[in-house]
Image (cartoon, protein in one colour):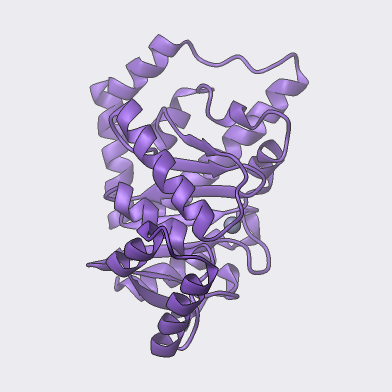
Length: 251
Ligand SMILES: [Zn+2]
C-alpha cells in the first residue's frame, strides 16, 4: 500500500467512533517516507480522512528548526507556511512532535489520539498510573515496559523541544526509546512499525486505562511484580509474539 493510502486507512480507523480516540479535528497520524514524513493537515478530521488530507514535511529541515534556539513562533509559522505553499495545506500544529519521535526511534508509523479513558487518567491526580507499572502481560507485549509520561506544556515548538530532551533521557536510562508517549492533560502517541500495530497499541492503552480506573474503584491498583515484568519483556516466546504482531500488520 502506498504511504498516502496507508495513512488514509489508518486515520479512518483511528477516528472511528468505536475507537473512542478522536472527535472533530482531534488527533493526527503520520508515516515516514524516506527523509520525509507525510502527516495530517491541520483541521482534517481523522474519521473522514481522504488521501489529500496529508502533507509532506522534510524531517531534517523540521529538526533544524526545533534545534535552533533562536527560532520561535514566527519561524514555525514561516516553516508551516512554506509547506502550505508547496502542498496546499498547513501541517497539524502537532507535526513537530512526530518529527522528534521519528528522530528518536526507527518507527515507520505514528498515531496520536486523545482516547477518552486514557485522558481520564491524564487529566486526573494520578496520571503516573499509566507508566509506573504493568497490569497484565499483554500490556507489556503491546506497549513495552517503559512508556514515557510528559507534563503539560504549551503545544508547538516548546513541547517538541521538551519531548525531544525527554526522549533522549529516556533512551539513556532504559537503553531504548519508549513505544508510547503520554502527554498530561492532552493524549497519547503510539509509535510503531505499521498501521495495525499503532492501532492495536492505542486500543491496548485505552483498555489499560479502563482497567486502572476499574481497579481504583475496587480497592486500588496492584501492578505485576517488577521481576515478572522483566521476565515477560525478555521471554523468547513473548518476543516472538511481539514480532508476529508487527509482521501481521505489515501484510
Ligand atoms: Zn493532540
